[in-house]
Image (cartoon, rainbow, N blue to C red; front, side, top):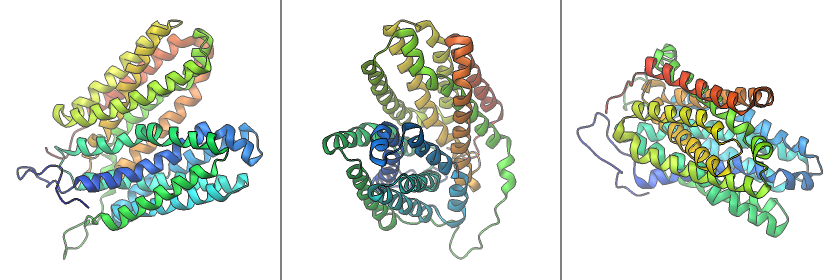
Length: 401
């Protein structure tokens, strides 16, 4: 792997030892995982035909994948206890197994088992990778490293899902796409296992200190978890009903809904790159508070575009851009609130974000049906601002720049 560090500064408390090659290897592993995770959504009609089940049954693939991925705290705790690289490699082994099952399975049960393994792979890999990058990057430079890592979410849609869906259309078979994912996972496993040095958990010759789990009850940790729960709940109130809202109020066609999906991909990439460039410069907490505040303002303004397509597009783009900037910026901040339990804290952040989204998804449609888009937008803004207030009051950065 490349040996030149991204940044080095003797004045920083923690040396920047992460190289560009190491960052690329870790990010490519996440890219392979995200492609496998995201492709199931547009693939559902094809899979229903291939596996001879109805769409309602095939939607269980999404459910089991999400349920498996909430085991993230286990991945974070294992990373803290066993080393980040070891758990990252274990996650990629599970991805290889899951992709192989999806490639070879001709029954729904086998495919379901494959997607359960992919969900577990995400639970192991993501917090371990975030902790690995954080441990090898000074706090002053960490936003850049984690920002590059998070571009893999948008990259999965633009560079992975889109071309693989073309492959499905050309071949009439989903197994080829999962074969490509399997090969990508295998290459990523080799890069992580043999191209990355294992970050030692403590200096050689010393006894590993006992973990003080009481740190998880610190106000800063609880504030981060509350922020991610409230904001995820708020944004999903909008995301869940946006398709139905567009069809009902705008008379949107399938082609226009496709335009909105493409717009989301561009916004996700822009938000990730914006965080990568700015979060270290403006300060992590300041960036998070500003980003989520703008997300709330955008949510409150969205109802003004009801029935106005040309107003909706820029407002919705701004909403998703601000949210993506905020969520990407939140992880560098979370990495510094309890350094001794970094992997566990990062995993709990993913869990709370997922829990918030699950809660928002249950509330969204009944709220929209009964109260309309104005109530949806305002409640989304209020939930997000509640998270901002709790973050401002409770979160203190334990690491110094």
